[in-house]
Image (cartoon, rainbow, N blue to C red; front, side, top):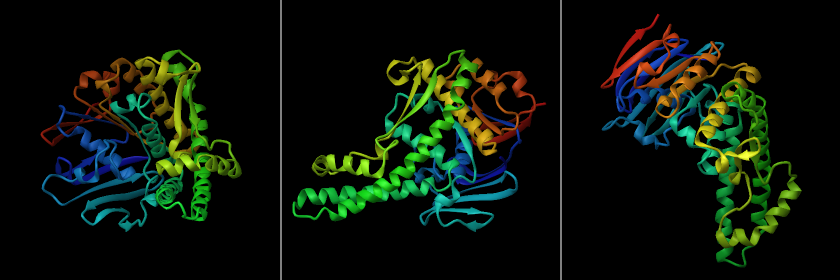
Length: 365
């Protein structure tokens, strides 16, 4: 999967920009604040339909403008033109100029694997952050997963609202609650199966990669869920046991919205017992395992984005990892200094030098 051309219109700092990329390695260099991350962010938004910076959609539109668009030509087995536009009318996505009605039918068409400095903190972060990361990854791999998530969140919202009603009105019939509960369990079990399979697939590769990079073994990701390996009947009994608590606090205490993903090394939970270096290594290995999953299990070469990792990781380690990557991957690297990058890796790279939103392209040979 390669993106050959990118066009931006009123995206972030860029009023208008058109770039042609190398099929191999593309390095985007510029000072902090120059707009280099905006370029790789736009590729990610074109694929995922939202930013990896946790930003609201509105901030993606250039100041004092009322709309923006991102357009990219992407080739997998065949070439397609993808377009995402954002305005007061909402978000619109098109493939080959055909509007796609549901975002869930669009996402997964362009596959990206992303490394950012924020990823290195994910193990220390909340379960919500880890769920969000896993959701994005599975959404790209499994068509229909995002639709299930949307349906689950819709039913969860309805159930929580009815719990609050039951707290206020003691005479409210619980019949509707159990209709919602049955639906929540049904959808939750489907989502749980996707998550469990994804983690099993990641674990096929992650420890081997860790051994290659750190010479240490025993790296594993565990899926923690009240739904894991449970039947619908068993879960309904759990919901019954929590009913009084659910009514009191007005929230559902069981479900895939409480799932977590634990990174461990030699059976030690890295969040509690790992060094910062071990945690960073674990995330690197997780992302590399995901690339292996794409290539070996799905036959897909995803677009790889490495955003400003030299700011938080050892340059020698990153260069060693770059040397190990599959040569068929298209890679985007942002950096403030080319001195961070090994000269052998620079060979045959296309470098985009950014100064005040002006882009100068140079091919290293």
